[in-house]
Figure 1 (cartoon, one colour):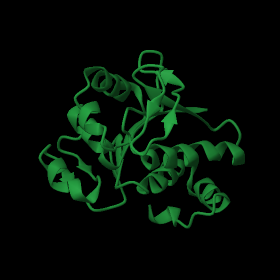
Figure 2: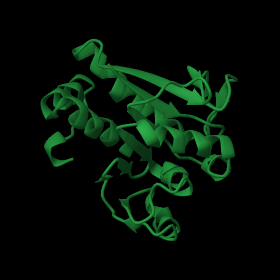
Figure 3: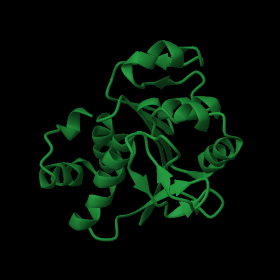
Figure 4: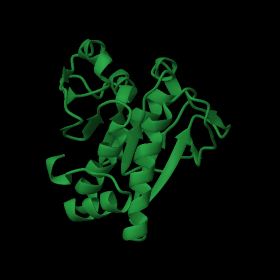
Length: 192
């Protein structure tokens, strides 16, 4: 079983974390015991996302186990989260042992602040390309960009492609395609 942690924080964009959560959790309906997906936050208090959804995290930063995959979503709250020392420490700590450290949308900026994107290829929300380039990042316009341990995905709904790409890496293209069909999402997993 692969443990996947999705970081959440106040004003996180809902689709940025719900889309990968759905895809990366749904695989268990096809292949039971594949993943354990945790929502991780600075503390155990409910987190209010950008559009008003309130979510209770499964784990705190301190209690979170070592992750196989870390997913960092974006949203308006990233401006505060990317300067939060506890969040930055958590990202850096998990990056030392995780197989993959990933982002959705402007979550890339939390990875950049943690020093994980310097000299890497990455993507983010289309209006933030120039901002991300300022971190010495080669920004690509792709939906998903994979550079070593780091995987970034473009804006908002790209979290779905992110999820399918991760399933393809972790369990193979065939299983990823089965999950896509089951949730009625059209994606060519072989082109991701």
